[in-house]
Image 1 (cartoon, rainbow, N blue to C red):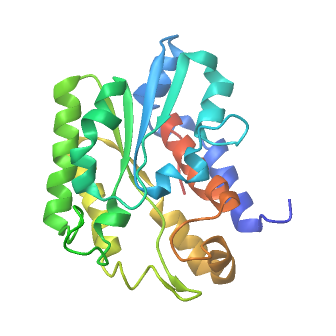
Image 2: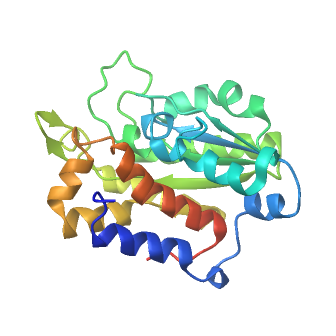
Image 3: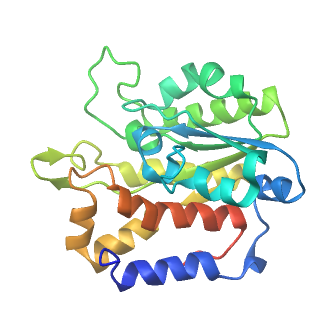
Length: 245
């Protein structure tokens, strides 16, 4: 496929063929391998709601297709992403969008909108500080575990942003890297699995800036081929317990 330069092929090879001995598989995979039915909820922003990696439409090649191909009807994937929403909304909508589904595993990402400085004061997610982002994330985790202490919680960083084609996605998120670091810190402190997509995207941005600009034409949302080439393999590798570059 012409789209993939050597970078993508190398990344895919590393992610999908690396030894699984470096880390245990996620509880989701372990339970599915044991023959148990599982419900996975994807919770976050438009990067989840509309990201091709998280697409639950059969035949669209997303995470749900991959899991269904391995485990059939034992896996249920629910996309509860909310375009334009940050973690204040994530806390407020948790009962309806996550807990009501009684998930076995929840993937969470809200950093990209917590870092957004363009909300007006009447918007619930206006001016979320780093401290508030961390507090909200911990509140979401605590409430999920209070509902069911066996629920597996997985945190995610996502892609960088850039200013391009009259879009100011980066200017409006001047401290995005710091908001991603909150997720790393919480994952480390609480012993949670972290899917750190950010470095893979930064590597592409460094190695092939022209391709990176093509992949984020409005500076924020990866196009479908890029989402499937970079974000999805990293999610698969993390769930399997494989090495990542």
